[in-house]
Figure 1 (spheres, rainbow, N blue to C red):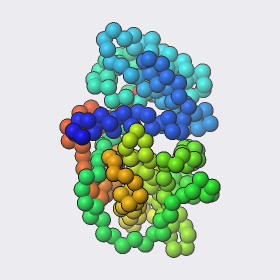
Figure 2 (figure 1 turned 180 degrees about the vertical axis):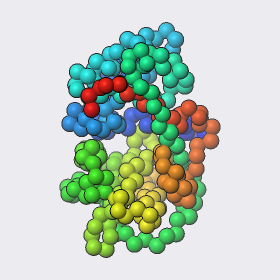
Figure 3 (figure 1 turned 120 degrees about the vertical axis):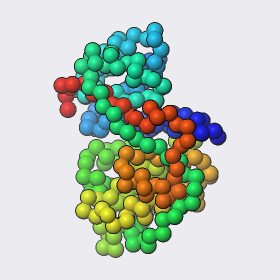
Length: 262
């Protein structure tokens, strides 16, 4: 697979991932993800605009998106759909419709090298089953929105969640790997705030990479991150940046409506 094809596959996967834990309404021009039971989750409540053609009425599209979310008492939020030069085409329409534009730089990597993490593993890492108590999510993430996402995702055999515990059973770290769209995505890499800086994320990453190659057929393994510390861990674990990925695709543009309900 050529580098641009890899980048394209990753972007396609990123655009459909919310379907695994959110409701979907789709038209020829946009996709709307919404979950009124989890209103604080941006990943579960946002829109993607599919096009950037000059003849598209972006004001009309954005008004429809805005009205859809406001009717559900959700804050209108638009993510980048990785369509080339899309932001330049829709920027003025976003501003006219009271949206603020942000940029969240997310860098995407694929696994294509040797994992060089040799840190001794002092965590007991186990796979979480559908029937297990998920209350440890609160201890690791500290938020209700992540609990609700995982509560839904864990019902799928394509989603694999792992928790790392200390010798006394205290859960301190998580990682997940999900198989979708013919690729594998690593996500939910998290260490409890009071236990950071002890190498637990490195241990969890190595475990997950090893588990992937041991338990599945070979397929593209990728992840995205926006934390420089995490980036260094992934480089050590054998991940590398996708060559040829357009620079604009590293920026997951967020447009939020000013004054919308929170």
